[in-house]
Image (tube, rainbow, N blue to C red; front, side, top):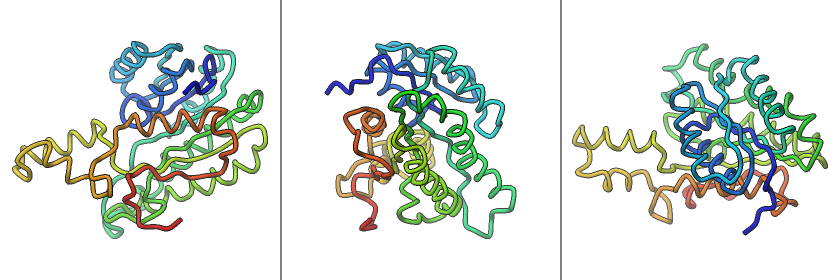
Amino acid sequence: MDLQIDGNAALVTASSSGLGRASAMALARDGVNVVINGRDEDALEAAREEIAAEASGEVVAQPGDLTDEDDVVAMVERTVEEFGGLDHLVTSAGGPPSGPFLDLDDDDWYHAYDLLVMSVVRLAREAEPHLREGEGTIVNITSRSVKEALGNLVLSNSVRMSVIGLEKTLSKEFAPDVRANAVLPGPHETQRIRDLVEAAVERGEYDSYEEGISGWAGNPLERVGDPMELGNTVAFLSSPKSGFINGTAITIDGGATGSNL
C-alpha cells in the first residue's frame, strides 16, 4: 500500500531502539525523511545507519534527553532545519521503573511524569505551528496499561493515562489541521525483552529462549508482537490513508487486554 507520505518529514523520539526505532524504520521505508532521537550517541548512530540502509528517505540523528526542555526544542528545530518543515510527530519514551506503590517515592513519580507526559507536552507545543502547515499528524506511543492496570507497574498505569487525555484534547484543539492518535502496545520482541528473556534463561528459569519468549505472549494469538507490526501501524496513522481516524487510542497487543473499550 502506498501511504502517500513520500517526501514528508517526521520526528520520532526515543527511536534508537525498540518501538520508536521500528516506527522510524516504517516511516523511512515509505519515503519519509526522519529525525531519530536517543541519549546514547553511539546507539543512536548505529540505529541511524541501520534505518538508512533500508530507507528511501533521509535519516538524521539528533541526540537529546526528553526530560530536558532545551533538548526537546532542539529536536524540533533540527527537523525543520534539515527538511524544511515537520509533518509527523511520533512520541515514544522509555518506561518508568516497575514496583508496587509503597516502594516508590516522590522523585519516582515526578520523574515518570516528566519523562512520559511533559516530554509530549513540550514536543506538541514546539511542533504545533509546523504541523499546521500541512496535514500534520501526532502519534503517541504509550502502553496497554492505560486500558488495563498491569501488576507491579503503578507508574505506567497511572501516569500514561495523562498522555491519552492530552492526545484526545489535541485531537480537538489542533483539528482540522492536525490529527492526533495513540497506540497502546503490549509485549513486542524488542531488544529489551530479548535481554530479559536471555537473562532468565541464564538464571535457569527457562530451558531455551523460545520457551522464555512464549512466556511473554499471554494473548489469543499466542505470540509476542514484531516491533515492525507496531511501526507499520504508526506509519499508517501518519498517512492520508487513515485520514478519518482522529482522537483514537489503538491497542496493539494480540488481543490480550480484557477491557471492552
